[in-house]
Image 1 (cartoon, rainbow, N blue to C red):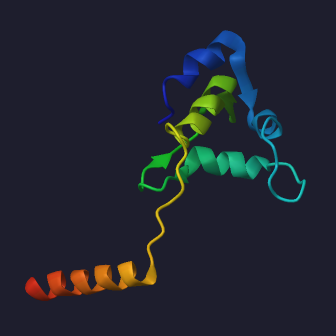
Image 2: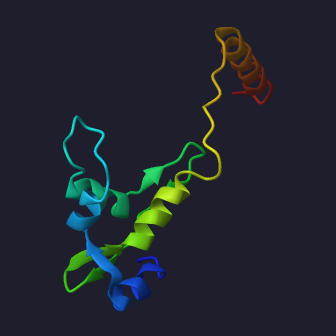
Length: 112
């Protein structure tokens, strides 16, 4: 089911094709543009965030083709960047070992 926020935007004439959406994004693949199949993947599968949530690009089927909007593209990007971007926490080998031992003890307690 498409997200309902994009439908009024498309109906108001703000709809863009997936090709147009792909061209609006900069490439990070050696100068090659973002492919339309990538945009379709963002609609169908979404992008998994670090916390496990999945964010999908809002789009709707209109006369047999997918349309999205500039605003939906902005919401998609914003949802992947909530607040300030922070670097992932990197554990030291000692911290990883202690966490592993702690998990093993907890599993042993419950009989696994």
